[in-house]
Structures are given as C-alpha cells and as structure tokens.
Image (cartoon, rainbow, N blue to C red; front, side, top):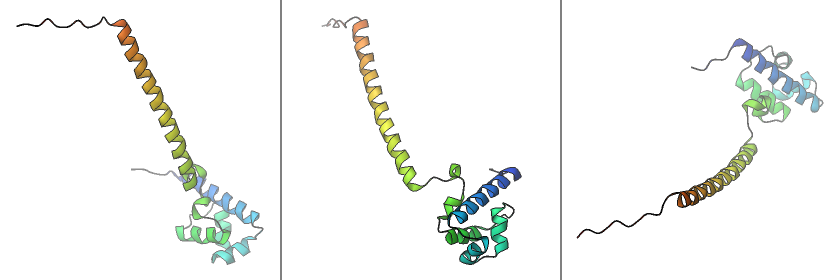
Length: 129
C-alpha cells in the first residue's frame, strides 16, 4: 500500500500554495479578488497560499478556475506531465527506439560476418546408400 508521510503532504500543500500565490500575483489580483472569483472565502485563499489547509479537490478546482489555469497546473511538475509533453516524450522515445533497432541490426550483421570468417566452412555430409 502506498502511503504519504505528513512531511510529504506538508511539502505538497506548500508547493500548491506557492503556485496559487505566484499565479494570483501574475494576474495582479488580491486574495480577496481571487476569493470572489473562485466563490470561496478569503480565509480559504489565505490558508491555501500559506500551505496551512488540506483543501478539497472542489476548492482547488474553484481556485484554479478563479486563476484561469488548469487544475493540474497547481501541482508540482514532477507529479504532473502535460499531454503535449507526453507526445514529445513519445516521439523522442520512438526515434531512440528506431536508432537502437538500427544499431542492433548492424551488430547482428557484424556477428554474422565474424562467424563466417572464424568458423571453418561446412563440408557436405557423405551420402550413404
């Protein structure tokens, strides 16, 4: 069973709070303005920004909507990957896989050439009969 320590949860809440604060400031909003846009109390916004409240998914969704960002953008990058990034990663993996296949083919060819040079030629079996 996967568990999260209290320290890990505190770190996550702090990171989410920092992202909310940063985005709110980028939007040049006060905490009161964000609370009004998000449909929550100013105390909720303050607690989230300070990493002091383990808020519900609903509250985070409302705050992210108030900030005009996707809900996932409030979480640390190490835990969330955007769909366009996944496409890029898959393309790079596909390119690397193709290059590895080519290298394997060349290696197998070199092994075959080496075997032909090192092994004596096969002599035909005598026919019995």
